[in-house]
Image (cartoon, rainbow over all chains, first blue to last red; front, side, top):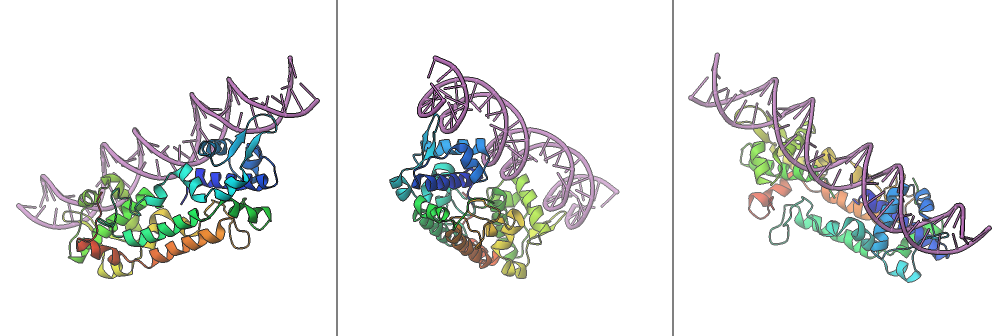
Amino acid sequence: MFSRACEYGIRATILIATHSIVGERVSLKDIARKTDSPLAFTGKVLQQLVKGGIVTSVQGVNGGFEIGRKQMEETRLSQIVAAIDGEQIFRACGLGLQECNAKKPCPLHDKFASIRNDLKTMLEGTSILDLSTGLKDGLTFLQR
Amino acid sequence: MFSRACEYGIRATILIATHSIVGERVSLKDIARKTDSPLAFTGKVLQQLVKGGIVTSVQGVNGGFEIGRKQMEETRLSQIVAAIDGEQIFRACGLGLQECNAKKPCPLHDKFASIRNDLKTMLEGTSILDLSTGLKDGLTFLQR
DNA sequence: CCAAAACAGGATAATTTTGTCCTGTTTAAA
DNA sequence: TTTAAACAGGACAAAATTATCCTGTTTTGG
């Protein structure tokens, strides 16, 4: 569904948020360890998220990644996905046709568009904060 | 969503069905042309579909691919996807965790499972014949 | 029988994705 | 001021996916 890079990015962002909630920064090293992700590669993904304005990075000793309270409330999962995988997943034809629309639909168009739209709605309706609270309370997990 | 290979496979199968409905076979050459797919690669995908029992191939002059009436009624889109991309898409965690379930869910588990299940239901409820009739009647398309 | 059409399948190549390594810069603390 | 922690980013490597090429086998029609 999502690329590896995107999965790592979402996991990293959720972890960062749970730390930011209690006023802490997280280092890439800790992110990689706590989300079971390859360190250097996750670093690249985080660079994309910083550029995309999803999370903030602080260099130097005691640096790391963080995300503001308002940001975690307002940022939607759809934005993380878009920042890493692009908008393709929200628009693309299920059968890979470049020009597939209501006027000239592929055989799966209607049924696929319905699912794709449900996915879009779900991703747009889910904030980083939504995903982080369960993790912070030990109800959800980011490993294995 | 689906791999390229899978998209080609679905498009090929639908095209084969529209020809089989009127008692014709289609050659790989025609399939590639009419579905805008790379010939040799599509050939490989079709080999998988033949092995998977989705379509039948006939060698020699006047050979090609075909699919029986009963097969096209009974075969579900989910089976094509499974034959090429595997069952991953029906089971996998949205965040890529290997062990994500109701007992130990990722933060997105419930919301993602719901969408994934809708997709599964849709694919299992759609037959090759369903997809082929619109194409045969000129209401849907497989190119561009 | 022979030629040509057509699928099967191995080998190889190109591209994309995933992943690692190394060097540089920033920054706080000792 | 020096050191070490930590992110940034370029270069490179590995793996997976996508795509092509070529040879072989099957089969029908002339």
